Image 1 (cartoon, rainbow, N blue to C red):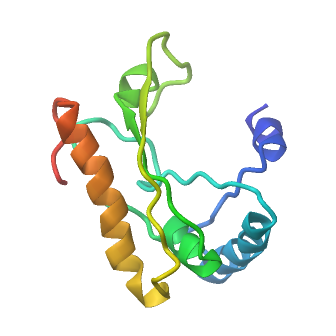
Image 2 (cartoon, rainbow, N blue to C red; image 1 turned 90 degrees about the vertical axis):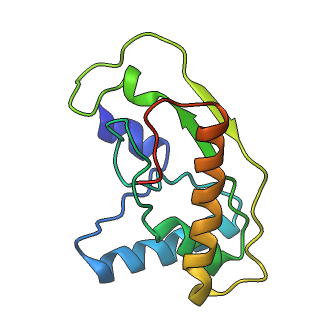
Length: 139
């Protein structure tokens, strides 16, 4: 069921253990983005257990830099309470989402990926702090 839904949503799965395959998939996605398809990346690479903001993976930033497309940082508050890491079911409740201002990437190149990644992470971290999400630390 998940595989069918993921294919219908055009989910881009990146196998982080196979670098060349991941790069090829990112390059294919760049063309799709230029054709008007949007992408959503979960920068931590996994669901958070709650308690801290984990380090971000660089794939989404690299893709945005290569495509010269803006990044819209999205902060999801307390999702771990509704969908705990090892749970099979989603719990009922309210999920709050903060959509940030787009971060332009057109003036950056791939060597700036760490700078852009920190801009995105900093925005999300500030949102978590602003909404006083208990237990979040800089990690």
